[in-house]
Length: 94
Image (cartoon, rainbow, N blue to C red):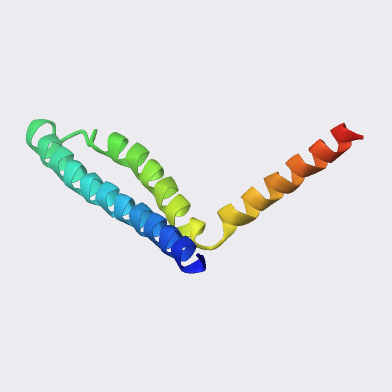
């Protein structure tokens, strides 16, 4: 039973990391394409930096969510919320 739980967690974490790598690959490909289009159409104005910057923020947040989840941060937050809910439930029962 314990091995099944670890396998499920490992698969979920690997899936999250794979999803991030796909996101990173698409980010690079699309932004290279936007850079090329920008240089061919309006080389005097670097408009490609706007979508690149916004997307980079999202990609960074995605990366933090993926790689911090393995640190136990998410588990600690869930445990904290469960304690709060149990505390509220116990107060309401009295």
